[in-house]
Image 1 (tube, rainbow, N blue to C red):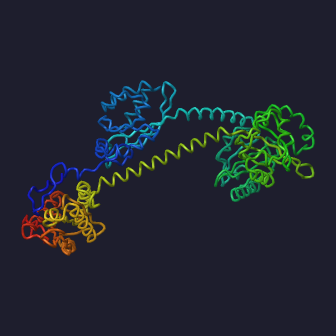
Image 2 (tube, rainbow, N blue to C red):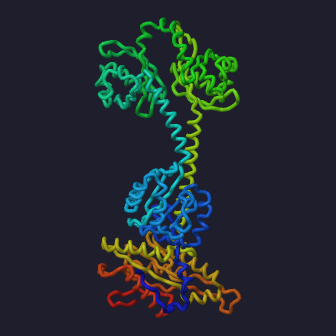
Length: 621
């Protein structure tokens, strides 16, 4: 514990006493927001009137329920949203007993035993935790928990709850939509592969394993060079390098020997990310053998066109639809395919919300021959705006000329809206977290500094001094404490008034800081008394520092307007104490006591001087 202040008035000035002095040293903490906040600071702010002023706006605006509990099961903090979300009766909250709180809330949960077990585990862990809570009434909460630490010691936990019931319903709807897409994907006949920059098979979709040269389980992890002859493997690698370098799709045709027969493939290679490509390859063997025969047989697939679950169309490069299926018409708000064919004369102006999307779509088709997952905003017949995703390709005649475009369209408006809502929610959470972090940092700063001078306060100085003392003991480094106050400061206050007295204290603090090193610690010890920690310095090295400080203040002269005393000279009395030669027998409080003794001797022997404590004679010299 730090040494008690002397009751004797060494300078003739009356030091602040009683509750007022205690208030000068008290600094609020910041409850339940960051793992670095101490439990003492948390409980102080939870009790203080400042807490209400600081968090009033945040508590009204946040949609999260927040609860802070210490290791003794005492509720330190709970906002109104938490009480509302968990439907807590006032008498339980008034008890501030977390045990009673737990007994009340577990009956609302689908798996109360798991909840209690998780809570018990977390109160003994200095780790973050994030999970989901399911309620019997169908509600879903996300739970975020962070530890409250004081140094390395666990003091309790802060819990944040967010009602995600609405979002879960959206996610369930999206999951159902995704299941439909997966079913459609499973019906594909294309081979879908992910191959990385080194030519290693990373993923294989279960669409058509019969068109693979080896079973999927064997191919995964293999290199192209291990599967194909060097020349063919080199060709594939060259194409992939071009795709990743240009970030554009490439379409190639190639043949493979599968189960003893030659199979032709047309593959679209797309850049998946910086180090891998997506291959979508389909069997074009029949097309190679009889393209003309397949072309004349298109009418056989008219029923598929009519009954497909996605929009299907054919259009001209000039911007007119040749055909649309019923789903395509419904997506765009038309009653029948014929209505849509007659209602849209210009795809560029009536189909796309931004005509530039049409130009981009056609450019991709011309460059790559097909477009995959092209997303755009489009216009419905009634003027509404929708998001669609298209897969399309060029269809060429035997002479190589473009016959038409054909593609598949899916309405993804719901997915886009859900994505935007989630993005906005994430932005709001990040903004709130940033505001809370800034508030915490400000409160931590205020808890460590003196409000008048801006120096470290008494409590924080002792934390830093104790840490530096142990470091000096461990490494056998010297350490000094320098303590000083103003001579006749009471006369200054009585003559000039407390306002100018406070200004003088600030000037003295600034002058002292200007005379020390960046590594030295200057603090207001209380009243007009200041203390300086000088690491890596002995008494002989500290003496000129003290004299510089004393000389800088001795040059000050204040005029007492309206007083008979005229000009008032400001002087300091300074005491210096060095950490003893046997540091194992000392502590930082003892060194500070020695500096206090030397300061007292400087007062007794005439003031306006520096006195160094003599450890051999246990007195100041």
